[in-house]
Amino acid sequence: MIDIWQEFLRTFHTQPEVVAQAPGRVNLIGEHIDYSDGFVLPFAIHDVTTVAISRREDSTITLASMQRPKDGFSTNYEMLVPLTGEHWARYPLGVLWALREKLGTRNFQGLNILIDGKVPLGAGLSSSAALECSVAVALNHLFQLGQSLPDLARITQRAENIYVGVPCGIMDQSISLMAEAGCAIMLDCRDLSTEKIPFDIAPEHLELLIIDTQAHHSLVDGGYAERRASCEKAVGILGISSLRDLSVANLYEEGHRLDDLTFRRAKHAVTEMKRVMAAVVALKARNFTELGLLLNQSHASLRDDYTVSCPELDLAVDTALAMGALGARMVGGGFGGSAIALIHRADAPKIREAIATAFTEAHFKSPRFFNSLPSDGAKVIEPAGLK
Ligand code: GLA
Image 1 (cartoon, rainbow, N blue to C red):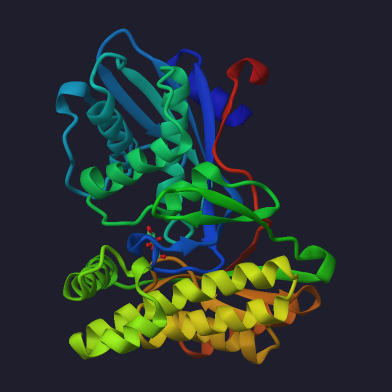
Image 2 (cartoon, helix red, strand yellow; image 1 turned 90 degrees about the horizontal axis):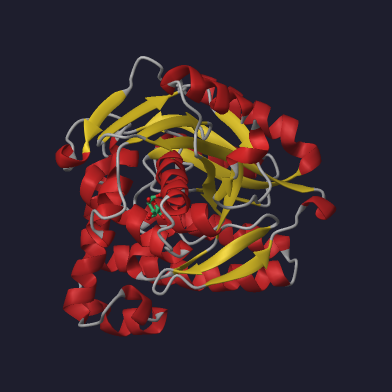
C-alpha cells in the first residue's frame, strides 16, 4: 500500500484522494451457468488489485500501471469510446464509460489513475474483474455516486461486455465486490442476492490447491461466446426465459426438440445447477467427501458435455485425483487457466510434485501453484490512514 502511495506521488506529483482494492476469485462450483441465471459458489482469493486516484483540473484521464511502467495511457472524456486492441487501460476506461453511461456526465472530471495489480494474470483467477471492481469502488467513493454493490457489479460487467468486448457473465465482478472472508458466497445470478456459506476447511486438515496450468488456448474468446449461444438456442427452442427454469427431468422430457450438441450444453447447465445446491448442502453438513465427488462430476460435465476443458486442465485434475485429492475440477471460463483440487494438507507437497512432473513429461509449461483462504471483497482504504 505504501508502495502505491509513493509511486503515485512520483508519477503524478500529487497525492491520491482515494485508494481502493478488489480481489480475484476462484469458483468452488457452478461453472458456465452465471449467464443462464444460475446459482454459483465462488470466493475471493487474497490477491488483490489496488488503485489510487486523484482528480485533475482538466478533462484528461491519465492511467499508469506499476506492473507496466512503460505502458501508460492518456485520453479524455470526449474520446471515451470503446477501444479496440489489447491495452490494459480498456478495463478501467470501460468502468468510467459505463458509469458515465448510467449516471451522465455531471460528476466526472479528469483523473490520475495508478494501478497495482497483484492478481496473477492469465490464470483464470479474474484479474480483469479485480481491476474493474477496484476502479468502480474507488470512483463510487470519490464522486459519492451512491451505487450499491449489485449496481457496481452490473456496471463493471457492462464495461467488460460492451467496452472491452468480452461477453462474460456476472459472477466474477459480483464476487470481487461482495465476497466475505471465511465464506464462499452462494450468488443468485438472476437477482444478485447472496447467502454466505462457511468454507472452513483448515480444521479438517484440508486445503484447496489452485493449479494455474499456464495454458491459454486461442479458442477462448469464440469458444465462450459459442457456449453462451448454445444455451440461448436451447432457451429459444424450449420457450423458457433461461436454463434456470429447466429441471433435469424437464430436459430429458423435452430434450428430443434439441439437436445433440445443444442438448449436451443444456445438460451441463441444468446438472451443474443441481450440483451447486448439493454442494451447499454438503458444505453446511461439513461433508467434504461429498463436496469432492461433486467437484469431480462438475469437471466431467465441463469436459465431456460442455467441452471447455483442455489437456492441461485434465492432466492437473487427473493427477491430483490419482494422488489422493478428494475432488478436483477446472475453474472459470476454461480452455486453459486454473484448476482447483480439494486435498489433505499433508498431501500438498507430493501432489504439487506429481502435477509438475506430469506436466514436464507431457511437454506442457510448468504449472504454478497457489492456495488461498476465502478473503474479503473490494474495499476503499482511506488515504488519510496511509501517509
Ligand atoms: C468466466 C466469465 C464468468 C463465468 C465463468 C464460467 O470467468 O467471466 O462470467 O461465465 O467464465 O463460469
